[in-house]
Image (tube, rainbow, N blue to C red):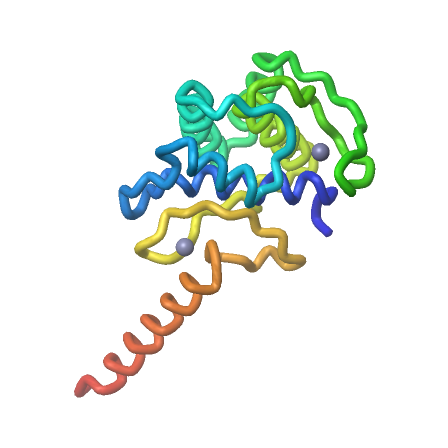
Length: 186
Ligand SMILES: [Zn+2]
Ligand SMILES: [Zn+2]
């Protein structure tokens, strides 16, 4: 394990939230309260919900800041950004235990707005990334036609693609390129 379990889950969910922006195909995947519901269910977010437009907009807004921090490749910028998210939320780290999860950190209470809790969870994970000097693990997919972000949690820091689909597609393309290169007369 590279980071504590809750940090790894938080990074994966932050990446998934950023990827709802659909940068590479210009298709936003978080455009309705239903989309927020799906995301919250998929990533097991607990706590209060308002299920309204304001909540949707706040979560949508957060994605841009997380994308900026994920892709800036500057540890000072990430440190400042994480601090800013934590300060704006008046975050207060506490160990908690709930819903079958063992002791882990929360830095907000369940009554805070969803976007605030998401921001703080992501910021706390970024704190871990920065102080472990592991910023290089926050990646953008290496496939030519994909801009999705992911966190590389592999032991040897070898993960280049957001998922197997992009990896396979890129490998097939490289194989075809090699073959057509070999078939060409010298
Ligand atoms: Zn929790
Ligand atoms: Zn990809």
